[in-house]
Length: 110
Length: 111
View 1 (spheres, one colour):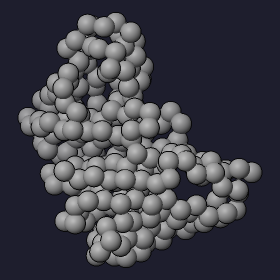
View 2: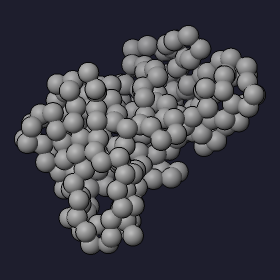
View 3: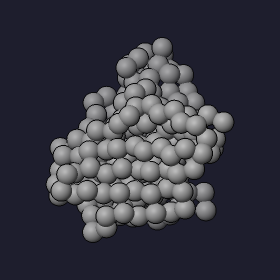
View 4: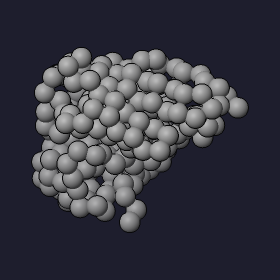
C-alpha cells in the first residue's frame, strides 16, 4: 500500500514550457486535491475532484488545469509555465475528512 | 470563505518543555479540525484531529483543545523532544469537503 505518490519529484522548466504533474493513490479514495506551498503561506488549494470525471476550482486555480479520468489518478497541468508558479506542489486524497498527502513535487520555473 | 489564522509563526523551546500553537477560524459551521506535521522535504502528515462534539483529545504527548464558542483550537505538545522539530499546520474543514490551512508554525526544539 503506497498511499499517495507523486511524479516527478523535481523539475526545472523555462518560462512558457508546459508540463503535467501526476498524482496516484491506491486507497480507493473519492476525493483528490492539488495544493501549492509557498514560503510563509501555508498550503493553498489549486483544484480538487470529488470523484472520477469531476473537477472543481480551488482558491488559486489560474494558470492550471486538471483531469481525473481514472479514480486513482489526478493530473495537474501547466500549459505555459510562469516564474510565479515556482513552488512545491502537493497532492492529497481522502474518503471523507482526513486527507493523506503525497511527498510533493518541487517545481522551478526560470 | 473560511479564514484560518495560526500563531505563532515560529516557536523555539528547550527540550522537555511544552509547546502550544493556537488557531482561530471564522466559519462557525466548521466541525472538523486536523493538525498536520511537516518535516523537511516531506508532505504534511496528520498527527491529531478533533471534531466539534469533543472539547479535548489526547494522544500520548500531544493534545488538541477546541473552543467552538470562541472559534479557536490549540495544539499542545508536552515533554518536547528534538524529533518534534518541524512545521505544524492547523486546518479547518470547510464546505465542499475542502481544508483551509493556517500559515504554519515552525517549531525548533533545542537540546
